[in-house]
Image (cartoon, rainbow, N blue to C red; front, side, top):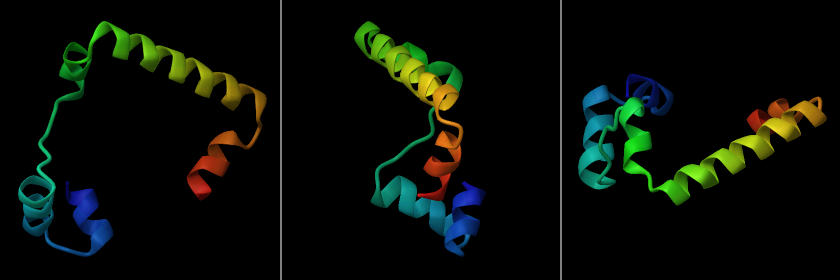
Length: 69
């Protein structure tokens, strides 16, 4: 959260209030995320990751293009 606050040049507390109260977001530990997904969602996630990996291997500047906007 401090990274988002730093990027927006606001306090961490303000960032927390915006994310939790205004945007209704909450933290989810990455190790628990997979358990929250349905089998279909997990399969779709694998398909998308495989496509991205293929593109990254085929297109030399693929990742750079994505980061540049």
